[in-house]
Length: 218
Image (cartoon, rainbow, N blue to C red; front, top):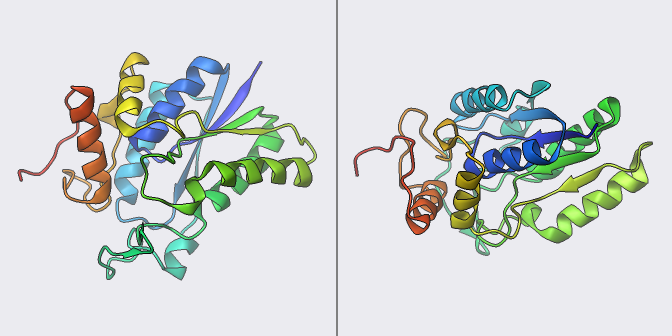
């Protein structure tokens, strides 16, 4: 019996990662984080729908609103406009993946999970430092040094895929893209203009398929 925890934001990368985990593991435990992001309600709805679709054993939501309280990201601060610093957009949430993985590792110890899946993308992402392969290798070392189990592994199955490859892989796994959401700023209809929407639209166009989520007329 293999158990996996999947960090599921509700975006298409984490959706396809969940589809991969569902194929590879016997039991899924899905974990979502509410950290005051602008599309928090929509992401949580997507999480619940995807959890139901994959019949997860448990689906938990962690309140990390503290990340919004300390600020520093355009994803959580509505007064910040989009900008870049040394090539990294200010949609980066400081050390978000590390804090989320720590929560997942703690839960994995309790339920005796074998692995933690996260849908990080390095090659076609925004250059976030906590999406690099070296970061996840370091976190695996942290698990070995700081847990009783010491045998939990972090898996990043789409890390070196392009966004269009992720779309193609999702279609091959019958992933329900209509239940996912990528827009940074809107919850009813995707804006189509933010960096995340742009990457998603380009990915579907390059894969020769139509994105099933609604977009504002542009």
